[in-house]
Length: 178
Image 1 (cartoon, rainbow, N blue to C red):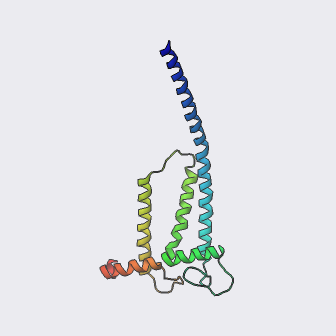
Image 2: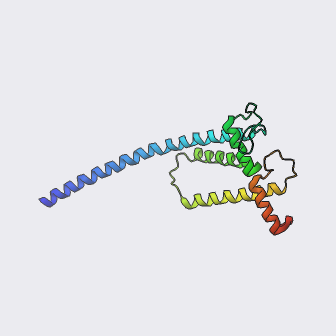
Image 3: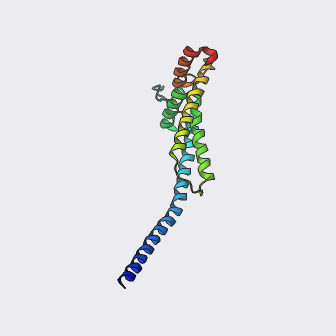
């Protein structure tokens, strides 16, 4: 009888644990899509703000590489948008437009897969970040090599990154190999 009573109590404890896990699972089923929708809204807002800030870049605005002319900020993103655009164009040149495009692409993926149950994969994330970094390095160098010195950007078409990589690759491989 004691054994049977312990078994019954064990069964009740197991049922309570299963109910708690089921409640936690149901809460996650509700919470995860809402978090993804919030991330979607954040990505779309960041995409639009960064794109508008880059598109409305003015050399006369104060930023990272210049103090400005003292006139009102002309960038549609305000002083922060002018500063972000200046940093992005200074470092990456015209390839700075890849950042809002990648954020917009990520927003599209979040929208498309908002109800799909997938977790975080560190290996896939690391490969994507590495691939994006290599694309930025190569594309900024190519933009610098193709620059005909008519760019209105602070460090040319490829930015400071492209200028540095292009100088090293040209010294190592000549213009044809670069």
